[in-house]
Length: 259
Image 1 (tube, rainbow, N blue to C red):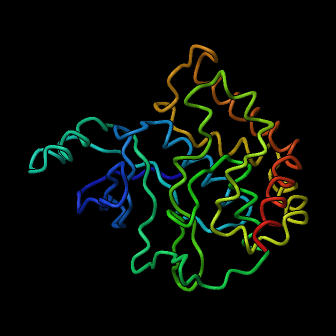
Image 2: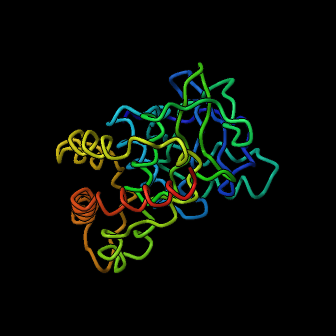
């Protein structure tokens, strides 16, 4: 994950509760900036990096993720006190996602055609990662260059807000999958399960976990140091993959009630 420095705050994106913003960086590109000082804090950014990174590892389209260094001086002329406080609370590394200019939000009322293999991959990944936020109310999907892109994964891996709950969540059937916006199209879950588990090797997972900035990994009482926390994320994902049939079965049961 490359590092950029934010050079200009352009505009807030008020659709999201965490108040992300469009910014310009020193590489001349625009990014959607997710602030470490917002809402769920660094853990939401960790979920974005891990889920987005694994999505990219299996071939799904996610905007490029970057480590975005933010100097609070950028907020000194900001008239909105909420935004100014957010910038001041987010000094250091934040998360940037490449800005997809002209992208269109996925419309669940008149959705574009999504082929079953792609729908199955996305449903499978969201079930793996406990992502509760890909519903008809909030699809978190964009159409850009006639292709489907995945965004906004801060609600996944929700167990890490309460690490004692992590072990129980490994075997979760994830019944919330019944609300997934792409579930009706996901007719290839069994074959996708086999294919994607092969792609998510320990090395592939480890590479994604290594991208989490050290500053976001504050020590957890139940886990310990940042190094042990990285190992805990990797161990949880490895264990979750071993029982993927549990959430695949649940997704198929939920889909059978829809089609």
